Length: 278
Image 1 (cartoon, one colour):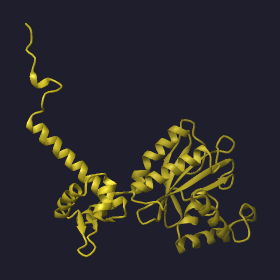
Image 2 (cartoon, rainbow, N blue to C red; image 1 turned 90 degrees about the vertical axis):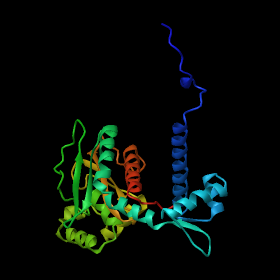
Image 3 (cartoon, rainbow, N blue to C red; image 1 turned 45 degrees about the vertical axis):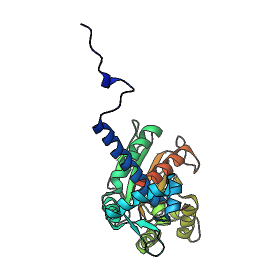
Image 4 (tube, one colour; image 1 turned 90 degrees about the horizontal axis):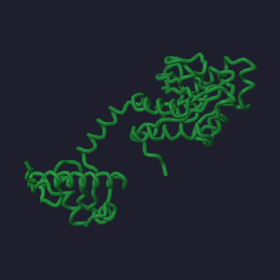
């Protein structure tokens, strides 16, 4: 029996009213989100004309969306300047999201990507009471033999991980711990450091490069690269480190490993709300 063709299934058939209404709601939501995202990208404050130009919509259309967003508390307007601002409800949403943005959880996928793509051992560390402490550890199929694991405390002065915290985390306790390490160091260990005033020189090196690199310093036969992860306040909250056997591991600042490591650290920082300075 020959089947009767359903006219509603035709490609040029007019969609049912419910489908049209659903599409309109989706399009309205997308435009509203575009207005909010653009306002945020413009520093959270903008005039109607500037905002409309950035969204590439007419001022009248953008004004209608802003009126709805103001009713929901997502946008506010200054009565004097007539400029629009991110509203109190959006700020509360943002604060809740930032409280949930736990760096270790966000870094874990980056560690897996680095391990699989570059076949390197990598980990993430936080600054603990005794120093940089490894929280997650990823190894490739043929791991490098190192005597550090999750829970290990790294040196602030001799490890790449510690040097990032030392160079970029401006806290008195960090320098105090570093000075204690220097006081307890052997002459052979001190000979590996730039003298005089090794702490200041190491800080300058890390700040200039945006990362830390060590070769056969903390662990003999091991090289490492470490990069900072920033939170929404601009504070270093974690450090991602990749390491490998010296000779088969390129620790150069412009090498493939360091470039990938910095890229993953920057992407994680953005997820934590960090806005890099232009």
